[in-house]
Every structure is written in C-alpha cells, then in structure tokens.
Length: 194
Length: 294
Image (cartoon, rainbow over all chains, first blue to last red; front, side):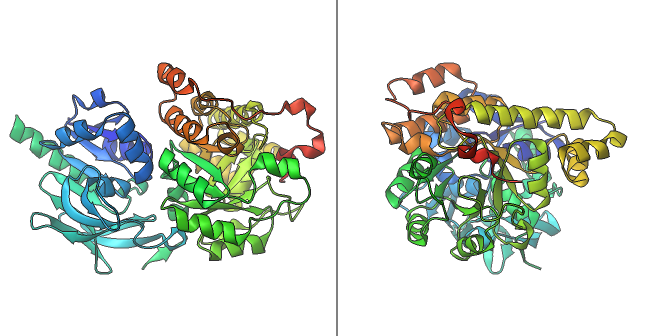
C-alpha cells in the first residue's frame, strides 16, 4: 500500500484523508517538514493559498516541497493548484512552480458564484461532480501539460508527468474516482523507482 | 446543469477555512494586515465588538462603504455581519458580493422571535451557538457554518470554552444514545430531529464549527483548537492589542500548531499587552450579547 501525505497547514485536510483511505492508500496529515520523509506522494488541499503560503515560508517548507516533488507525485486541488502553478495572473512570482501553467485566482467570481457542475475528466470518467468554490482556472498551459477537463471553455483539471491538479474539490463528494486516479499514479511511480 | 448556492458549495466554503483564523477588520488597511498575517478570511465591520460594547445604542450592519473598501482591498474571502432576523441587511450584503454572512448577536437583533431563513439565500451563513439545541436550530434554518457565541468584545475566553465544551459533550451524548431515545433528546434540546439523527450517524456536526467570542492570545486560540474547534474567529483581540501585526501572525501560527507548546511559548514572547478584557461576572445580564438569539 502506498503512503500519501496531505499538507495540513490549513484547509480541507480530513476530507482528503478519508477519500485517500477509501481509494486504497494509507493517508497521513503533514504539518512538519520531517513528515515528508517516508511518503510516496502528496496532496496539497483546498484552503486559502495566501494563508498556506505564509505558513509554508514560516516553517521553511518551500524547498523541501520542491525537492520532494522532483520524483514523487503531487496532486493539488483549488488552492493546491494555485500553489503548484509556475505563473499566477496579476501577481509577481509564483509559489512552488511545479507545473508549467498560468492560473487565475477566484476566476469564476465570489462565493455567490460558486457552483457544482458535471465534468468529463479524461482517463477518469464521465459525470464527475465538480464542486467549484471561489475556484481558480488554468488560463494557459505549456507543451508538456495535458488537459484532463474543461468546463465552459475553461481548463479545470490537468496533468504534467507526475503532477495532477484540479480547480474543484473532489474531496467534498463521495465520488473518489479522481483520488483513485492519483493513487494509481503514485503506485506506478513507486514501481518505477523500485 | 450548473448549480449555485447548493449545501455542498455553501458548507464546502467553510471547510476550506478549517485550521485558519478569521479576523475582524474595520478598514482596508487592517484587512491588508490580516491577509499578510495569514488570515483565511476577514470580517468587515464598522466597529469591533469591544467598541460596539463601549459605544452602546443600536448596532447595525456596517456602512456599505466600509464593506466595499474591504472587498476591494484583499483577495481572501470577506465576511460581514447582519442583525438577527434582518432580511434586508442580509440581502444588501449578499447583493454587494460579500462571501459569507454572519447573522450575529454582536449586533442589536432586528427580530426577537425569528432568525433568517438562510436557505433562501445563495450566500452562505455562519451563526453563533451556545449548545447543541441552538446549533441544530441554526443548521435547520440553513446555516452552513457555526461558531461558539462566547462573550464578544470581552477578551475573556471563559464563555467560548463553556459553549465549545457544552456542544462537544452533547454531541458525544447523542452519538452514544440509541435511536429510540433520540426524539425525546430532540425535544429536550429544542433541536430538529433530522439534524440530531445525522449527528448520531456521522459522529460530528454536519457543518464546520469555529470558536469565537473572547479569543485574545495565541494560547487562547490553541486552547479552542484543543477543545475541538475547526478554526478561530478573532474579533477585538487583534486590533485592540498593542502590536496587531505580530499578534495576528502569532495567533495564526498557534492555531495551525496548537499542540506544539514550545512553539506557542516562542510565539507568545514579547507580544506586548493583549486587549484589557472584562470579567464576565461584572457584565449585567442585559449587556451579555450571548443571550441574544432564540
């Protein structure tokens, strides 16, 4: 069984842990740098990206997270997607800069515009319930990035090698197909390394 | 096909705030300080609770100019307070694009019998509660997030502790009850039966529950997390302290690492004076904000 961490500085941690456990992985919350050591993969959850970034800096998580991501899979949802992007619209500098994409924060509007919609996700399936909460979207992607899902002409899920990201919240639903997809990515990566 | 204002979207928004600190602010400058310190949201107010208490008179929804100023100043979610039962204040704040409304006992109630039917709104609501009956009634009316009432503007944690312990204890009791005992418990608590049934089945409240009303120090925030809060509201505690920036950062970090006591010791060093605070026993019953709400 693979062991996957959920970055627990702030945000919807418990829901990701439950979804991972139901998808056949061991799941733990990660609050300290040393807890990254024996993980096979990591989820960066939804929450507030500005708050998470401050805590990442305060506890010197930035470089250890980048080093972890060199050969281990990372899955970011909502704020996690923002933290993974190389560029953010209207903002100087990015956060972890793992994926070659430009993202726009709060791109669908304020909370009253938050919505649920059925999505088609490439390689995952049809009718996936996408919960979008003050969600970002992916405005531009580099050549190495594969689009996995589009909603109203906007890219809302993508993959680049061992990196996966979604603008919505699969952890808030009982449909664990996207988590299963990520667990599969982690299992495949672990096999290659072994 | 595209659905807005669903329970999942409204409750989910509060899920994203978990482990975080929501700070009261009265202008754009304070909102920016809060955001930079790592707040997950700000509550836009005309006055912080300690000043509302001092000013007396009727406390109403903030001037929309202040709400607008705060909405434009930060990228994190902005919350605002409407009076209990004041349908129009709530609609006005919703129309302005506020991300979360607090139907709050800190303001003077507009209705002494009924709360808002929060299911009618697209914007989600947070409400205060002192016990599981009150919490369940608010959920029944459509609240998507709860907080302890505590005693706002006192800088005294004792009431928030009382309310959090009360709610957690009552949840444990409901979970351990047999289903045939539940209806009578619903009657005794004044709680909707369906909400209690859901709590019994899942072992927890169906919405996020934050601590509020009296948090004044990093240790206070950590205490509330220890007692089972999902996150913390800090009202007067930050901008009534000697060094708001430092206080704000320290409270954020203590909330994240609430069981790291060495860290909390470091964070608490040289913070300057916390807000002065009020002993609850010196407050006349009529001055207790927690008594408002039904």
